[in-house]
Structures are given as structure tokens and as C-alpha cells.
Length: 190
Image 1 (cartoon, rainbow, N blue to C red):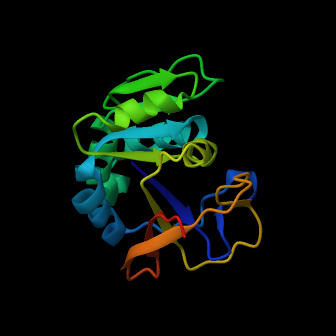
Image 2: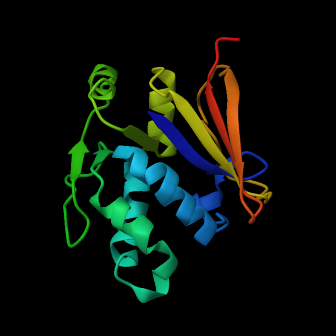
């Protein structure tokens, strides 16, 4: 199970008012995501806000010619099973090409551990608050941070509210022409 978040150089995953317009995503990154990550996944686990952002974009991206560079990503995003953790949503629905989505109201670490033990590919956890819950419970096996070459000055820091030190060990990096760099870490006891 891995967590993936895009970060600014000054450590924010979003700007004020949940602004992510500064995220650099291009054809090179999309090809990498399709070839390397999305084909390695069986499941997305998202919090409410991340889910709503994804649901608002990816179904349309699969059929809208203006998102031609995103079509392969969109197909995989739309079809891959999704679990949404939210206490405030009443329901989530499949519609059009947006398939395999399920709502879970309460976070249960033991159920997640059981889910991780199931045969299959990987699980991608997204969403700041939800990711924080997974980190606190020791459920994340790998952290993937894509650092964008931008300083945004203020926003929401990564893993805001962790309240303790988290040691990580760098296991590899991936650099893109855009200047983005993905840093892969695993939890470390040191």
C-alpha cells in the first residue's frame, strides 16, 4: 500500500483554499503513471475531497478531446475500484464510465490490514486527512512524493497533524523533464 502526494518545494500539498492549480502534470508524467503505476493497482482509497476532485475530472477526461493527453489515465482511473472514506457523504454512485466505487463511513485499521493481505496488485491511498490516518496506524508501506519545482509560500503542509517524527528511507527517485521529481521512501526505524 502506498501513499502518493504532489508537493511544492516548501512542503505544501495544496495552497490556500485547496488550490492545486500549481501541480505540473504533462504527457511524460501521464505516460509514466499509466505504464508504471496504474497498471500495478487493484484499488484506490480516497478521502472525500480527493474523491470529489477525481470524480469531477476523470469521467469527462475520458471522452473530451481537449484532454487527449489524459485519455489512458482516465480509462484506468474510471475503471479501477475505488473506496471512498467519508463521514459526510451520504452516497457515492457509478455513472457513465465512472465505475467500481464504494463508500465507507468509518475508518477501521484492522479491516485495512485484512484488505492489504488479499492477493492482488497495489493499493494507492490519496487524500491528506485520510493518508494521515493510515500513517498513524502504520499502514503505509511506501511513500511517493512528487516534488514540483515551485514555492507557493503558504498552504497545507504534508501530513499536517501527525504530531510525531516519521523516519523514512529513500529507496529511489524519478526525474521528469518538467523539473518534477518523485521521491520514493519506505518507513524506517532509524
